[in-house]
Structures are given as structure tokens and as C-alpha cells.
Amino acid sequence: MSLHGTIFPWAAIGLLPALVACQEPTQIRLEISADASCKDIVATSISVGTLADVESRAAVAEPEGCEGGKVGTLVLIPSGEPDEEISIRVVAGLAKTPAACLADGFKKVAAGEVGCIVARRTLRFEPNETVVVSVRLSAACLDKPCSAGSTCELGQCVP
Image (tube, rainbow, N blue to C red; front, side):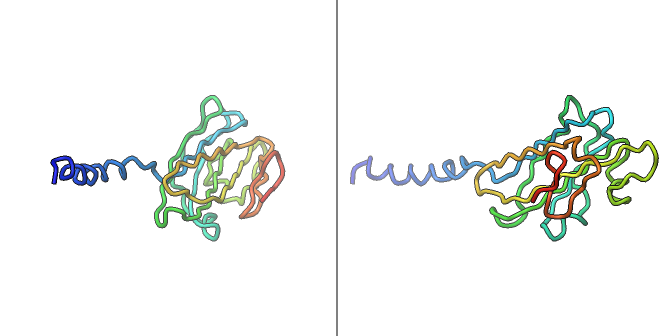
């Protein structure tokens, strides 16, 4: 057997870990922005779960305010299967906290109180891919929380 025949198979096996390591991560990148006035946004809470339980889940992140229309970016990775389905609820409190929005059922409770914007998404992870999801918190959706399984787009509740 030649030297070439002996080294080549072992060299190919040695490259396997490097080839596997080059796979893209399985993740979802949420890019959250707002057309509502940043000066009014107190904080934004982001909850992640299944469609059945996301409404009762605690926030995984709660960035304060926003700058230049950008609330922030959050990267999520699967906790189970690489193609699992997740639901996301984003609640922005304008002149009040997201916790106050949740406590009062997303309703205005005092004169002069601005209110809440709620956005939802349900999607699947794609194995070895970064899925980018833009969530725009629209002023047209102020105090229109919609029902679980739907979201507000341009002032209207849509699936």
C-alpha cells in the first residue's frame, strides 16, 4: 500500500469534526422595533413558550425604553428538538410597565395613561439555520392586544 493510500483515509476522518463544526447554529433572532415614540416606551417584555402557555409565561427579557426606533435583538435557541415550534409574546408598556399592562388586561385604567402594544408570533426553528423575525410594535396597535394565537398588524387583529 502506498503512503498516499494510508494517509488519505485518516486525513478525511480528521476533517470530520471540522466539517460538523461549520454547521450554522439553530436559532431564532428577534429584531424588535417600534414606530411608537421611544420616549413613551417604559419597557418591553418578551415571553417565550408554546401557543398553549405563552400567555402565562414570565418574561425571558425586559429591555427598557428604545433608541431610534430600535427596542433590541434577542437570540433564542431550541430547548428540545431542533425544529420545535415556539410562540413569542412581546408587550410594550407606554407610560407604564409591561407588568401593569398584564395586570390590567391591556386596558387603560387611568386618565392620561398611554397604554400597551402587544405583538405575537408563532414559528418553528429551522435546523442549522438562523431565522430572523422582525417584530414591529406599531402605534396603530395601541390598546389592541388581540387574542392568543393572533397579533395586531396596522391596527387589525390577524392570525
